[in-house]
Length: 197
Image (spheres, rainbow, N blue to C red):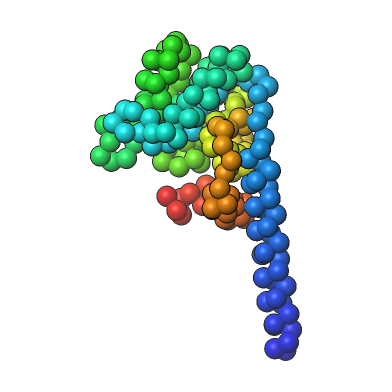
């Protein structure tokens, strides 16, 4: 009996390792995807802001969204991201202000400033997309987020493409993202983010 238990445990551990290895490969391969076919809107995932000024990570995403917008990928940009309790401004507003200063007309910008996680931001954005008759979006974030964002969007029923900022992800970024995706694919991303915040 003990021998069978050991075999079962060994097989279970092997299956988990294979699952994690496949997920790491999926994250890495997805990070290399850059889809620039026309969509209805470019959706920028939030990142930190400092009293209304975008952090370097958020600025990279905004500059990439601006490049896509100017290149005719989509006629509108949706900015997401809430704020921390002590902040005066949301990430979405910091992005809005940045793009206004870059010359994007106000009518082409939409703000979604609720949601403290990727899932919550995309869920809140979905309601705005439906209201504005936006059927397909280009998601902009860091490249190693591509796989998770695609999965969350599909879970929410959002038709998406991805066009990430430039830069090769680190091993640590890919491994951390693979761990989140591994759990999210089993539990569902809504439950994952409700559990982890």
